[in-house]
Length: 87
Image 1 (tube, rainbow, N blue to C red):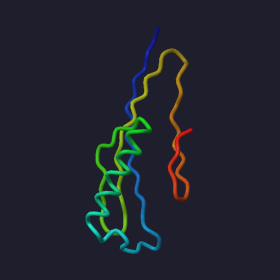
Image 2 (cartoon, rainbow, N blue to C red):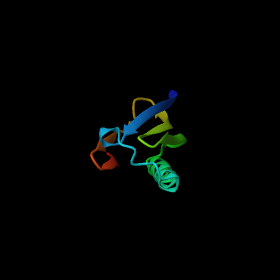
Image 3 (tube, rainbow, N blue to C red):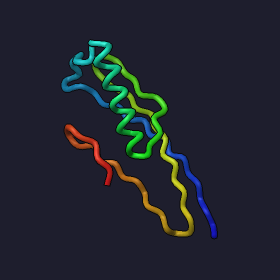
Image 4 (cartoon, helix red, strand yellow):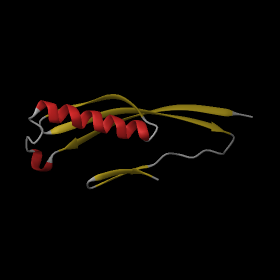
């Protein structure tokens, strides 16, 4: 049976409202980065780099997709105000 492999890299940037420096506190910023990395892991996305500065956050993650024949389930992530969910 044929098989296809893909590695999808996604770079996402979130900014604070009005680019205000809400993430000045380094321990808070690091906790947020760990939390976002955990969310990515729970969504079967490998966090490569999670970082940022006081007014924005960068996420670089990888998603591996294996298809066999024509049967595969793509992962879709919805970013809504205040939450991230997979469906």
